[in-house]
Length: 556
Image (tube, rainbow, N blue to C red; front, side):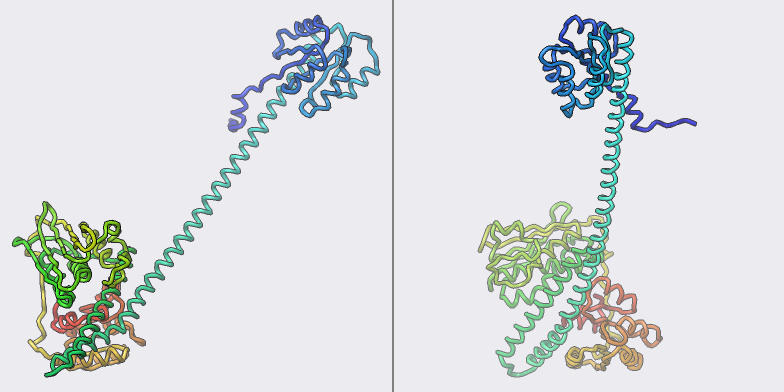
């Protein structure tokens, strides 16, 4: 069997404890020389002292393995010196051997032992005896040093083990604490997502009848031979504010999805010209209301890019809307597209309010707006545009010479020089059988939405039937066989996903164009709607153009 040495025993083997000094005290120098000669080749250092006072002085700062102390000394004899040595804590346990030249006196020997002496020798000293006795105490001191070192090393090892255990416990506690924090953050993130989803649902639901009702009023006024100007103006104002509120809800939810990494891009080949055209179409009502002069400059060659057209249009439209809002009525806006090296640049320039120098570095932060701004909004549009463009590998920068000197925003998107323009697909499905009047089913548990949507769709010349619950909706769609069915998702008895699945499980339900109309507008909601059998997903409130495109069987 091979015994493995511990780290402590290894350390003891490497460290040889120092042998303590021997203090020889005698008032006669000849005696000191004789004793030192007797111990000359001894493995210890000999220190001389000529009196008790000198001895005590030496003991103040030094430790000795043994004291050879003469009994008879002037002023302070050996016994008195021994008493002083024993009275001090540092030297209380130092071994003392008394030496005397006088005859053996039992009383002196007894007194010596009472003072803690370990031995009593008589002059003349026998060198061999002296060496033998001294060697015992030197060896004892060496062993004590070893034990002291070993105890010290053991204490150090215990301290390190204790520290290691504490560090391990601290790390375990920190890991556990971090795990709990991550779980709490994940739970909070889930609650936030759920809250935002329901927030969007609850905000969008009441907007749907408002948007539909305002469109009804607008069309009634348009058909009236002499509409009330005040009513027309107020209707336009309410429609504008409804669009603004819808945009704020959409921006808020999109920002939340981007920050949580839950927004998905549907990348496809498109052109910068198409993105800008759609963005301007989206922003044209606001530009028209504020009577701005709009100039658009496009290059003749197509600039092909890959990205999510809907999101890119959203980003550029936010920039154009921003220019329209922050430019006084009757101002000028210019949108130009140029190619710079491997990038397409979209410049949106206005002669509006401009941007203060101290505000410019923070222009793309969330909820950042100048305090004196009267343009409204939550300060999300530019932040959302910047993040959406960044997700496409592009950049968005802002420039302004200061207040009242206008501003310029530049979008840079990477061009795909090797793309084939034939990859761009724009597919539309015509209205079935060329009919302009359709049979439409409407399934929604909100009576205001049902009433307004029925009136609006009927005004457009369609035949509309409605149901207020999921089971009734399935029965209505299968019996009526409509061209288009608008189905709410949040139905009380059978949700919209189940309605779509049941309709698609019947042969007569496969020809119906199913459109999900819901306040839940996340990408996950769109995917789930598609998996359930819906052809289209329209977040509430669906704008009038989206409704018309859905009825025209256009892809969106």
